Structure formats: structure tokens, C-alpha cells
Length: 401
Image (tube, rainbow, N blue to C red; front, side, top):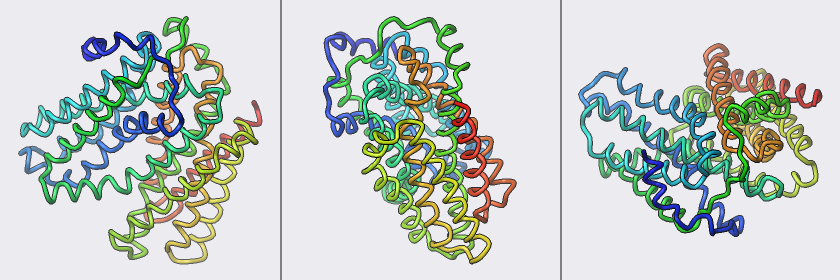
């Protein structure tokens, strides 16, 4: 239904062309990339209090986290093919509209069942906007080095959200109450939608095959699986770092909450510095060469973490500095994985992007969480295990290509 509403915005989109510079394109696209993650991270500080606020059980509140993540990932399997059928612009604007509306409604409800339902609706909107954004990047920049810059900058910006989102959420909740979190999300989504409305043209290629015809060649593609595994290795390494860093740095190394936030942010800074040079190196190395070097840096970082774990106590130097090396590897990998996975599927980029992200989400969620649980999340071993295993598998698949 929301896509029908968004169709009202479409009357002039076919006459537009994509003529934005890279900085302008980033300003246009980045909000949709960031909001999906921010809706989770900004909410974390008030999660313990929501049981009393909504007069419900902790299990119900947990659903507002786990169901959001599940719908965010699984929704892409619906919206990817849908964007191939009806266009990126409709899916993007429709998703932004649903995200904004559900955020405003969340700020106004005090009933647990309604709150859970609206969180699901918020995840639906986030999923649609996310798929349309990445499909547009694939449509416009697939054969250009600027695509590597945009993908790597997206990843660097996303690295800041888990670090700064909870801090922002805690400050907003302390000064303005928990409803301010969702009002903020609604306002940001509305601003992004209003910016996109006159400036985001349709980029979907013509002649898109039916969904079943689109899925089969993608799922049979060795390149798709190789580069998607590389993407999973990169983003999963950051997920495991995010999951273990509080326990290692605050629990064992004695960092304060503020000191931890600063240390954590340096990993994102390392990603942003690497991004500054990504375009040049990707142009020189190509897709396979960039992914190979990215996986090599993951292995090097894992080796440094191993040495620190065996030879010294947990500290900034033994845990965070090796993550700088892994962060550089993440940038080189994610700069090329989408293009590498979808290089042969430009006409069905929406479906390809959806599968790319869904497979990555499943690998990271299952294997990454398994590593944290099985290899002692108070140590560097989960990050060592995940980065080493996934980088090794990816390099093996690259050799077979």
C-alpha cells in the first residue's frame, strides 16, 4: 500500500537523469544507509527501561530488537525483486515514508503490542530504503571507480553508528525522554525523503526478467558467492569486534565508558582514512586484487590479535590497534564486493543486492554470534577465529575463480 502512496511522487521521475557529483550523491544516499542502523543503536540505552514504560515483560521488549533485525534482513528478499519490477525510486520513497510514519507513531504509543507492531513496520521501511539505495549505487556506478568510494564511505560511516548512536540515544533520553528518540528518527527520515523527492531519479535498467528467472543465474554464480563471502568476512569482523570490544576493553582492560567510546571510534577513523585512498588502489588492483588484499589484511590483523592475546594483557595496543589493520581490510573488501558479486546482473541489481545482503546477514548472525559464544567473548579469540576462517574461505574461492 505504501508503494501506491509513493507512486504519487513519481510523475516526473522518468525525465530525470543521474547527474550528481560523488559528494552530492553521498549526501543524498547516506541518510537512508544510516537510518536503518541508527534505529537499532539509538534505542539501546532505553531498552532496560521500556519494560516498565510499556508495562510488559523483558521478552516482549527483546522482540523489539530481534524482530527488527530479522525483518530488516528478510525484507530485502521482497524489496530487491520489487525494485527490479517497479523501480528504485518508488521503493525508496515508499520505504522512507513508512519508516518516518512508524517512527512518529512509536513516539506516541504506550501500548506494548502496538509498539512491537510499529517496530516491525519501521524495519519494513528501513529494509525497502536500504535495498533501493544500494541498487541505485549499482545501477549508476557499477563500471566507475566512484562506486568503490561510495561503498567504502558507507561502511566507514556505518562504523560510527554503533559507537555514537547509543551515546546520542542516552543524551536524548536523559534530557527529553524516550519518545524523543523516535521523534528524532522520524524527523531525520522525513528530511531525507524530502531531499530525495526532487533529486532522486529512476535508475532501474529496462528489460528486467521475471523474479524466478533472475534468481537462478545469481544463485548459480561462483562470483556472486565468492564476493558475498568476502563481504561477510569484512562486515562480520566488525560485528564480532563490536560484540566483544565492551567486554574486553571495559570488562578486562578497565576502560571507562567514555574512554571505550573514544577507543572504539578509532577503528571507524581507520576505515575513513583508508577510504580516502580506496579509489586509487581499487583502480590499480581491480576487483579480485582489492578483495585479495582486503582478506590479507584481515589475516594480518588476526595474527596481531593472536600475538597480543598470548603475550600481553588486554589493552588498547593489543586489541584496538590490530583492529585498525582489519578495518583497512574491511574497506578494501567492501569497496568491491557488491560490484564483484553483481557484475553480471546489472538488469536485476535489486534482486542481487537483496540476496547479497541477506546471505551476508545470515552468515554474520549465525557464524559471528557462534564465535562470540563458543570462543569466549571476553577475549580476542572470537575476532581471530571469525576473521581467519572467513578470510581463508574467501581466498580459497578467489583462487578457484
